[in-house]
Image (cartoon, rainbow, N blue to C red; front, side):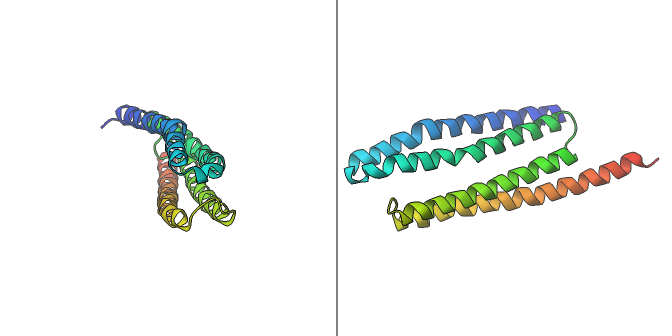
Length: 159
């Protein structure tokens, strides 16, 4: 697969993920939340705080998608192993771990304020595990891209 072809596929996938995430944040979450409120009116006081919390988790996610798109652009320009890509991957790793910590802390605060259920907290731990896994994987990938970029620079300077 050629660099441009791969970069175009990555861009299409990143845009697709972004569109799906926008639909989840703007349609699915409010509809599901409203369905829960309609079914259980005693949860009506929890709807708005949860919507604000869940929508705020998308900020770092969409920022990471922008970083992924920039990496795809660099791949298309045949700069796959560059220090810029290593730095972008490190930012993605930090954002994934930060978003995971925010999600965990937010769930804990919601539980402490009696706006959640312990079962929700336990179920959200699966999301936390996935977030940590993504953070660790991108940190490792960042390190490998950094090392490859260093080796590439060394080879470029040798005659």
